Length: 133
Image 1 (cartoon, rainbow, N blue to C red):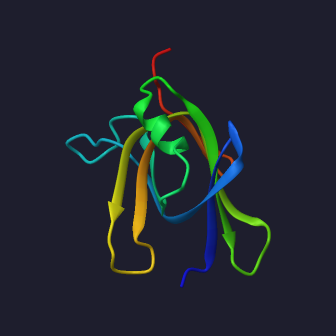
Image 2 (cartoon, helix red, strand yellow):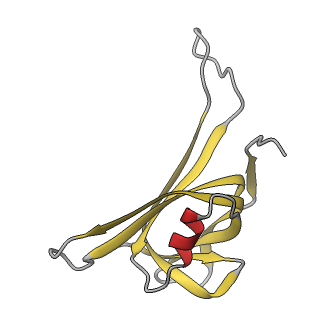
């Protein structure tokens, strides 16, 4: 059992919070032939897995290629009410959307999305992807 409760929320949908089952994000730098960093840090795409929600908010985001959203993933320790970590994304696109159904297990319908954002802030540490205007 997890020691965290995690929620996905959006600025333009303040009523809904989605309980997160899994989440990951990463950054990388390309290396030169001597294994030194050769590029600025890249990445920050976020994979979020949730129980499939009854609304179409996320699906509508995915199918609208021009829709950007800002929001936050907040991690709370089970035994504390304060946030352990906040991952804020700004001007983000939903670039992948998958729904999986299985009649086996406790969570039979799961949706996974990939969020690509222009800016990402993790507990105040900012990363900006250098996207053209």
